[in-house]
Length: 393
Image (cartoon, one colour):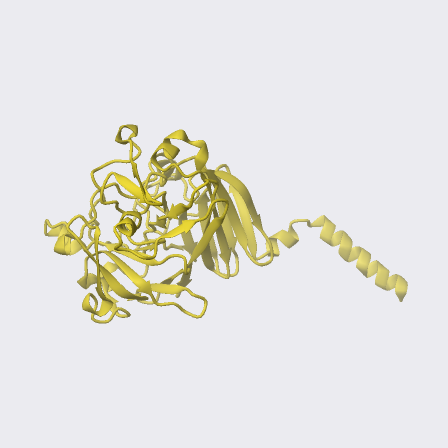
């Protein structure tokens, strides 16, 4: 009997060695690298996330063939050449707008050198790193619990970046796909001898594929709405969110035109706030960690754009193209996105923008109008995540 048992074990072992890819084929998670693109895969939920590592930008999250990240480009090469605000772009070293061509930190004023060209406009917007191609791949791995890719940007190595924001630091981002949800984790290490203000954010454009914008409803996990001046800078005053939305957890997107800042976020037991967009059956929850203290909602109303306006109450976002009329949903591009996508669907979008602080947080803090500005002590780190959790796909 012992000989028979040994023979069975030997035969099984030989079979395993004869098919070395069998275990890999049955693995739930994988991380595949092709050039500067890493694809994270969850086989159980049929979810693929594609990350361009040179930008550290996830440009698609495809669930059962449906992409929940809006695209305005037709190929990977097009995206690489002109990334714009596609995918999940990082806004740094400052997010959203500043009220002048300067920022304040530790009681000091730092004027931008406008001749460099990386900061532009009387009201600078979105920092200057969203198209930076200097990220380096740290690792791309998968195990039995998740698949992830980590990229690093050594900000302090670029003299033009340091000229505008003279705080030496290292940015590290990790995209982690686990249980069908995508975590976007950002870590900042302050190498400076002074505290470094943190005013970063993200600008992802999301879409649902079972319906168009006019059919979507929002749930906003926030308690206050920041009042904005004509230049879209917060005045320092807030109002209860119910004065802006009668029911913030049942907002018909077709009835609103959004480019607005919300704070005092509602938190669950883990300290996360939840923003949700719902279609006919699909739903996307964006969970925001506690170090993101505010969220910007951006979704211009196509009806206003067709009527020649820039958005209700002047809420259109300068420098952004108006959203065209929604079309009938079509299949998402192949994964990975290659070649040409001749029929890019435009169903509308909603941008839930996680922000460490409100718009113009560094300068408003200097004026005493904002109390939640975060900073990193010398030699210390700051870290936070937000999560994309699709349902009904």
